[in-house]
Length: 244
Length: 258
Image (cartoon, rainbow over all chains, first blue to last red; front, top):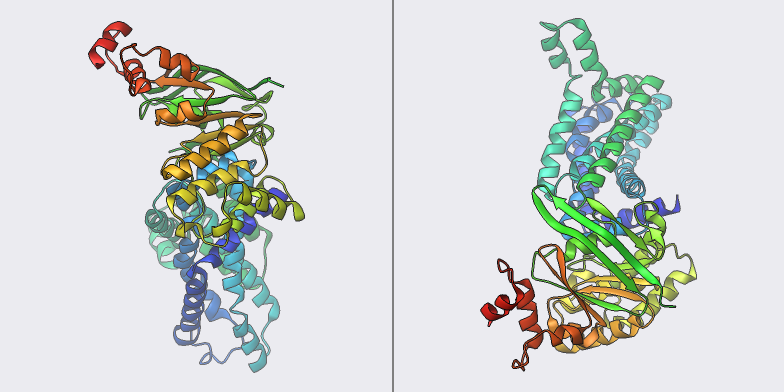
């Protein structure tokens, strides 16, 4: 555990060593505000909830999470520190978990900085706090899944731009299979089993169901398995290709 | 005292169709400073990477201070300090932050961290830059930071890939003095392509060519292999004669290289 925390501390501090953290947080807050108030019409709806914020959150995470995850391993490869890290007394699991948890904590800081919106709606009306808490959990789980997938992709390349683009595409696919338009299109010709399994692998369907205010075990299990599978694949990729 | 700290048996590495290292055997005792020599691409870095576990050998075993690297990597990794090729470090970290990170990674806690960092900064003369970020350092200082991270836990084994590359003559002299001093009670393996370095610091020279060891002996023995009439750059001539390809007979090799 303490070995993981050594990696975690270095990684988490590294976000704040460059202007990256500031730029990221400001951009995230600006865009989430823009989406929530202008596109989502938080005030015009006349309802005290954060639904507009959470509805746009997956699409915001789609671009912002790959910006966090792209450097996780690609940068280590590019500057050669992967050789240093893997010959220090760490296991690959320590390295993968430490890096992932640091990235997740950073994403959590960004998401939780939106709580002034929650305070605003709580002040203006009486929202269902249970739904909002469940939605925050859903948002964190979705960010975690995207980060785990992104870390895995970052481990395959030295190039951060490639890591970013491939991660956006992968996360987009993970989202879009649950998109109503895609579901309608597929249900036109594919057997219902295919439509259902597409919905089952979609991060969006699981997220939408959490937004209704119920943290169902199946939804949590879904995100947990995406994270676990991606981290496991990440360890294997580093194991096989660390010297490439 | 002088027990074997590094034992490599039949180390072999293939990258697809390229046979990079061909069954190398190497024993290094405490008190030995082994200069690993060879042309670029001979397999020096690959061998060092297998000694440190960064690369898994296709065949063969590495035992460090009595611990099998493949069976107990976490224990074996504590026994050595490693300076990888190019001395990689995190550019946005300050020198003292980076060394503290390495100290924590080496399981030091609390006050020991600062004490270790201070000691190693003193040892490799980094005091003037300890608060600078690594990206702002000159090549010589970066190399010394790399050396510092390898020394921080005072390991019995040191594996240094081109420790003096990019240093000016004064810095080279300083690092060589340091290595010679460290080597008196440790097993040190360093790679270089500067032959004077071998004479200056090494107690033993191992010359590798196309993945195989072609010479293993003291620098004096290596020098003795050069033809008598050559009085300048004698090691260069031995190096060329032993590593020039496509000649079978060592005598004709010497003849052609002249």
